[in-house]
Image (cartoon, rainbow, N blue to C red; front, side, top):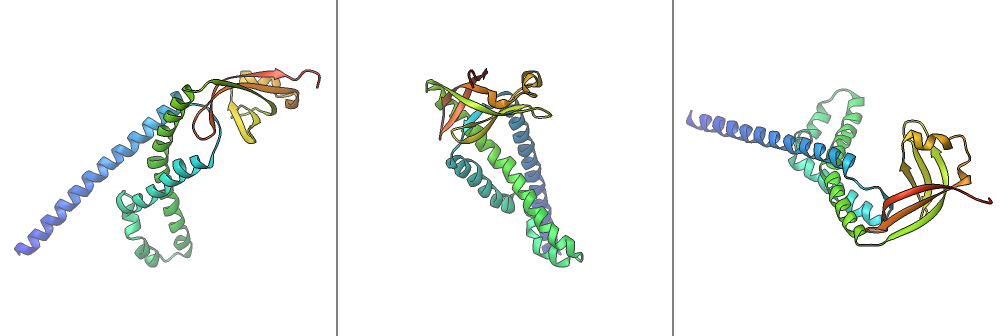
Length: 210
């Protein structure tokens, strides 16, 4: 009788710890989301250019690492721990196919929000610090496209990379019915980390004697 009671008490303590951990994890999760949204709206720099090192070290490495951490330690681990049993028990053939896909996507999105977003913010901060130590460089490039609609922007190639600068509708509206190849964009940038440049200012100029 005492042995059963001890087992019950152990399970109760374990459940209480798990519940507390889950609550703490959710608080951290939503805290990261709120901080990330605030940073992206008010503080994130507009960066041009790119490098494989960003994709490798800032996006993929934290995201893949976070994926396996999520499988082992997050609230998603509960689904993964019973994954094979759930798939075997599932009678619907479609669910046997879509449940694993859904679980992988859910875990990947969790990893992106919990690991890539914070690493991207940290990288952006160091990118801005590096850029402030470098001089302003001026470039001019042909404009390839004026984008209207819901996401107004100016499109052009910067160092062979396709880039867009988001703008207000009032800025791009006068150019929507004009040939973008009759215009060029003058940009002032500072070089940051890994061939990325922080945009300081920009200006649309008409091409003369085209």
